[in-house]
Length: 179
Length: 144
Image (cartoon, rainbow over all chains, first blue to last red; front, side, top):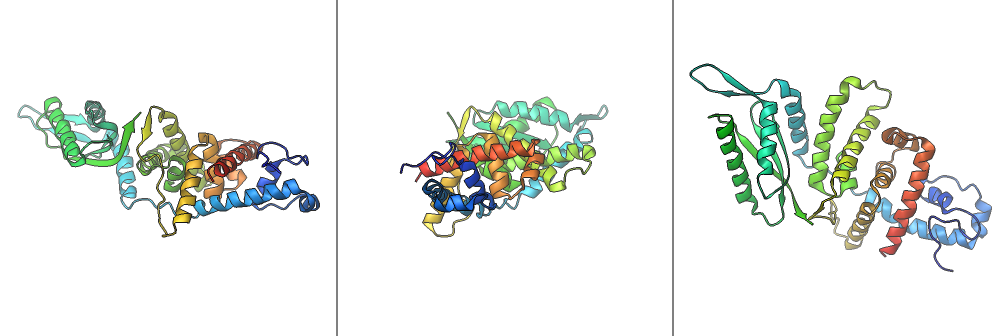
């Protein structure tokens, strides 16, 4: 007997969907007498049980978040919450100048797009520090590239916003390769 | 939230990014949250939407770690290989099928809860799950 497809009715007329629910969801067999006698249903059940054992083994694997994720999530939320309140103070002898954190983040995204080794980036500002989360392209020398990105952003801040000292934290969170 | 994102995306960095975006979305949506859905269902919806959005945007690049890593290694190569095979098969599913499988098989949500998370009717969830499970079973058999 050849293996029947999982998405077509079996030769006995029963649809595998019913058997899949028995195996995957543990529901009662609505026609146990037929299942007991039918070679097609029996064969399908054996294949499904073997398959679902694998799925259950994978499901039992813990997917534990990294320790730093909660802090980074809070930082990102805080940077959004504070959007209207976060400012960069630019010292000036003639009066005060404040640049909104929203503007700083928008500018930073543009500056990051100028960095050829950045595949994907997210920027946030919590009123004190600028945080960059970067996916680098494959082949980048990480330490060197992170320093270069920080330098680029700081130079751009100085050139665009003024002589302010905004700490720039670079988190390299991924590496990706273009097609 | 992280488990859903990681299992759907298979890439830790993307999962972490999605979770952070999901928390921002949750914060922004909090004023309109009326408690009609349970909190955990609501959070599942937010993270699932964030992941589906990430998958839609992920068209032009192939991640370096396209083969997902098991988060733990129990020293049993056969079990580790099984887990990798399942994760590979999972990522070959269409995103909406993948979401249904992850929510049901990995997170243990009921059909009603999945319907709430995905904004579908229960019969549609049942139908989608059937197609997703049939495809997953086919992929797993093929990989043996």
